[in-house]
Length: 260
Image (cartoon, rainbow, N blue to C red):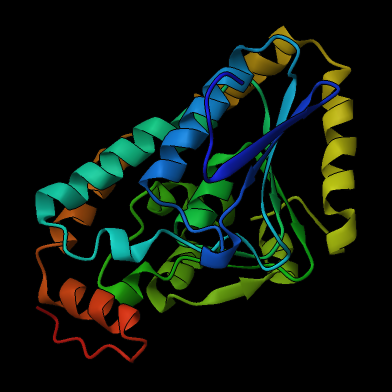
């Protein structure tokens, strides 16, 4: 790679590219710099003919990605909020979903908010048995803004998706496996080896056929809901509940919502 990364690490082993989000002190939370670096990394790896599968994971053993960096957008306006979602979806989440190179999410701990949305944008997911997953945005006066309202129902069904989103709760790996949110559950030390084993099976197949299969499967899911999600996500930034929710989070206290 001919660009310098600050928040991620990239390794290539054989025909597998491994991206590690490296912000362990922040539980690998996504910020603008990380999203831009991930965009550069995925584009570069996808264009590298030697790379046939990409694995993405988080540094350490506590978190894959524990959400977005809330301090970065706590004071955003409605317009800034909608632009945050629109740019993030364009640069990273939609990019991954439609990448011609298969992407495996190796979920090694908390995958919350934007972290779970990142994992759901990948073509499939493998999780360690200590992982916890959820979309806690409603506890901040928001909705998921990186495709979560669209991809979660596709994976687990409308009822289960609404339960996760409306309760802002987390689920463990066993339930995630039962619901179809993840493909496999393994012990933490077996996480990357299993992802590599699956990748090796993919590498045996035609890269043209693999890319075509991704495109064909994606064509079966409509994308009209994403613009509506961006619109509603941005509108949340104009509410008193958003201001209270984010302030309470940053102050580490319980939010007192008024419904305004």
